[in-house]
Length: 178
Image (cartoon, rainbow, N blue to C red):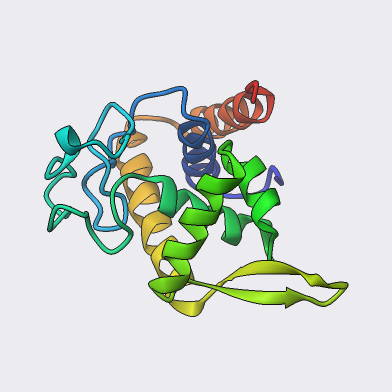
C-alpha cells in the first residue's frame, strides 16, 4: 500500500480488511447496500432465526444478489484485491474459512455469473477462480458505498488527521492476528 493513496480509500480498505477478519461487528454501511446484506453487529450463521433479517435490501429469505451475509462479497473483494485468478485454497486462507466453505462461496458466485472457473495455465489439474465483469461491478459499487461512508465520517478531520488515521488503520489491519 502506498502512502500517496487517498486517505479515504486507505481507511475504507483497512476497515474492510478488519471487518473481513471476523473479529468486529458490522461497520456502519453493513446491511445498507444491496451487495452487503448482513445485519449490523454480527455474523450470519445460516440458521432459520436469521431469515428475513438482512436489512432493507435483503429481499427474499435467501437474501439479495449475493445471498445472505458478507462472505460472498468478501470473496469477490478478495478476488479483486488479489489482482488475478486464485485457487480455492488461497481464497479460503485469505478469507479465514475452511476449504469446503470457500468452495460453496465460489460455487454460488459462479452460478450467479460473478466469478468463473478456469484452468491453471501452469498446472492443468488445478482450477483457478477469476472475477467476472459483473463481479467487478459489484466490488466497485461496494467500495464506492464504503468510501462514501468513510468520507462522510471524516468531514470534521483535517487533511493531516485523515492521513494519520489512514496510516494507523492500515498498520493495524496489517498487524491484526489471523
